[in-house]
Image (cartoon, rainbow, N blue to C red; front, side, top):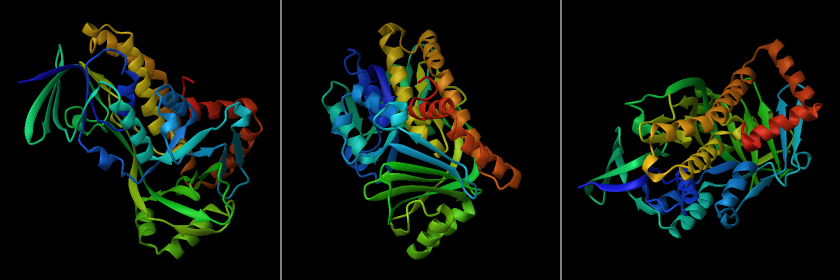
Length: 385
């Protein structure tokens, strides 16, 4: 026997939960299907880079003040290794308190989840979705929960769990960068704890994001290079990082547990199917340079909620409603993908003539207030900001 709802959200991570919260007062019957238990989600060790624009949206959802261990970014230092090219982006110049934030994934998820528990949204944890069928009149979802196979029919299904559910039937477009990223927490002798660093190098960008007593680093390189990085002892890792990054934060003192993941651009061929919408990583997975991926997912959720709230319940999942959602995200999504992809391809190579030109371009950017404002707004609010 099938269950019915207006909206089924597949994936109860931050993006899916943000969508549910944005719809909490809509009067719609909303079900969230999440494969993990809340305690498993809240133990995730990752840190997230959040833009000021995403902070404003989380504030509107009523969860921002509940998030703990937030480190603010007031300055972003952008440079090209082995050149004098430097650009500094300041929150004060943008007339905002901060440009962005670094916070624990677990703290964000916990605040969102606690807010969700105070709503009428039905959140089913431990629900593994096996199949999604987009029909002409509704979406049909098959999932496993508490030892039983269940079925849920919805006027609109929203895939917010990373997109693997649809990869066979609707394969994504994938561009490989030939890079992986090493993630770790480091401490140093002279931290600038409100400054984030983005340094472009021949092997890929390296980012230092202020967090707690030091920095979260995102150090990119070829798959072979990053595999070697994981094998280094701590002393070797810190010495190599100093040689690669330079002296801006002094000497690196300690490094925590290291992990790595491959980098690629993955995007769904379309963000909608009949009675189905894709948001967050289900719609696009980006290179971490400039920190656009998660923030774009939050904007996906917010814009989809706005479209839903303007739609009559009987028209949820209709071709008109889905066209309105695609239109609302077209510019920001494509501009964000293009912006991130271009940065990787232009700045991640070792061509001497290009290297000098890139350094010059970064220096010129620092002298053009309107251009700096454009870049900062793109990083904070996306193309629609």
